[in-house]
Length: 69
Image 1 (cartoon, rainbow, N blue to C red):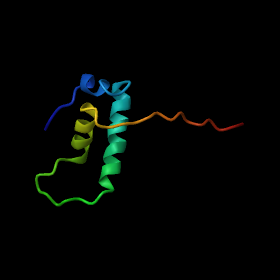
Image 2: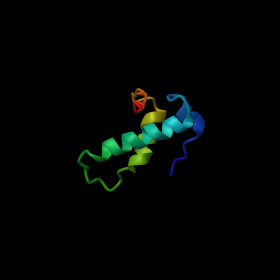
Image 3: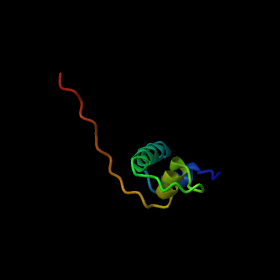
Image 4: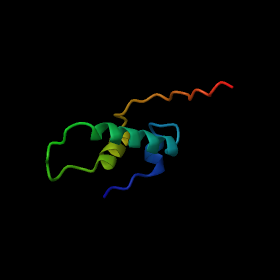
C-alpha cells in the first residue's frame, strides 16, 4: 500500500486537512460509477489520493452560509 505524505497533498490543496476532505469527496463521487469488476482494481481512497497528489482533481471551496438570526 502506498503512503501519501502531507507534503504530497499540500502541493495541490491549501493544507493537508483540505486535501483529505477533497480526496474523500472524490472517492465518494467515483463510488457512484459502475465498477469494471477487475480484480486488480485499486481501492477508491488510494485512487482518489493518487489523483489529488498528481494534480488531476480540480476543486473549489464554497464558503458555508451562516444561518440568519
